[in-house]
Length: 128
Image (cartoon, rainbow, N blue to C red; front, side, top):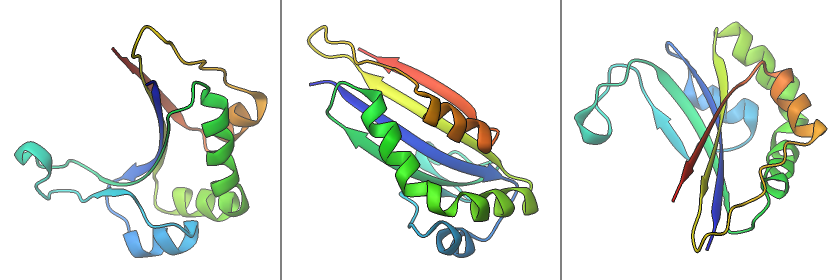
């Protein structure tokens, strides 16, 4: 079954994770703290707050719309927090191809506007 993930990441030097959770109104699905040991004994070079959405659907657009709906009401507060803490927003799009079924990776105008609003970086990875 094909699976798609979208991960909304805020990252930078150091920042208050609890304040970030409060501003966004969601608990991070993953956090990394600068200079702490993480997976595979890696020492993190930056702090990051991440929220992951997944689906077994074949269309990225359904998941990107869900991401927009989750973050849209707080986008001005998130942007202010991002700028105040000199953070970067990166959105990871990860898809897995199984049984030769390739998902649709359509980026609609709303999603592109969302990415542009935060001056987001985008990382797209595909796996077989």
